[in-house]
Image (cartoon, rainbow, N blue to C red):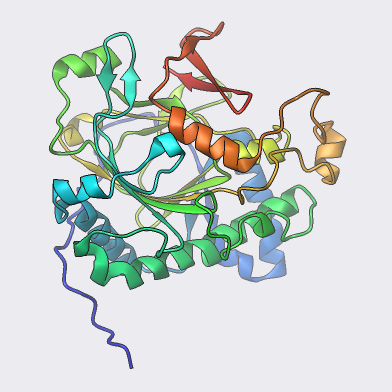
Amino acid sequence: MPSLTLPEIPHYVADPPTQESLDFADLAVIDLSKSCTPEGRVALTREVHDALRIQGFFYVVNHGWSKAQVDRIFDVADHSFTSVELEEKRKLAFQPEQGSYLGYKLPRYWEIESKHGTLDQVEHYSINKDMHQRAHPEPLQPLLPEIEAFIAHNQNNILLPLLRLLAASLELPENTFADMHKMEDYSESATLLEYPNLPSPSYPRSEDEEQKTKNVRLKGHTDYGSLTLLWSQPVGGLQVLSSHDGKWRWVRHIDNALVINGGDALNFFSGGYYTSTIHRVVQPPADQRERVRLGVFFFCMPSDGIRLAPLGESPVLRREGLNKLPEGAVIPLVEDWRKGRSSQYGRVTLKQSMEDGVEEDVVAGVVVRQYN
């Protein structure tokens, strides 16, 4: 019988939530436990629909994991950075030029502000849901079963129920989206677990860099997958661009909750009915200014061979006139889209858009925007 004792690692002590008076976004809270009944699924379908249409962000609570289990995952996330030597991180470095985020990304790789050449501070460790695709650092070896169980929970108990609600919201068969994100599909695009560390304690940002970037740590952008699952943590910095008035608003921390947002793949599949959510990361509030934002993300992408085209069989999209693209429009493959976004982000010179504060790039024939 396997041991129930978890390997001992240092406990990560989270910071208290900010006490600053901030302009927080008013986001819906989705109680995922209601998805267990037909009546609950009907109600949640409308709630998820409205949340994605209005704000593009929402919280998920009652997701099946206790606070103690989530705290342990943050212990593992912190261990991924603090207990792994720099040399080992370099040996396991990611390869974005090949369209791969798997492994360690060290700080000072992405360009955040081109005029003065200001670089990022983000350090992250990315893992495919197939734990055997790549080697892992020695300090994480005893923890791999825990990580694998966490990936399975995100996939089966959070992502798939949400994808079924999304299918219902477009009046599609319930497994339409779930079949595009199968657990057994181990291509890198399928799902990515990522532990980001922002900023890295080894690479503090100077006051001069803060002024040059106007305190922005990651420019306004959209995620290129279907949904992003972020396990809420207390250090502020994440902001969402409100579509109704164009203002950036802070995302509040809710203990033992997830923050969910829609990405480009969902935008493609819905013909723009669900738009990609624009968000950014800025300097933390004054009472958390020197803190590190340790994050745990679960990024989901469709399988590589799928075309990013509107699901024309959706009655909702047909009624909205969004069931097909204009003649001559580019319909990229997921693989081309994923690799293009991975290799070009922060590494190419962006062009100024006609819209003030917006810069553009072209990936797989599609215009990609960043909001400066």
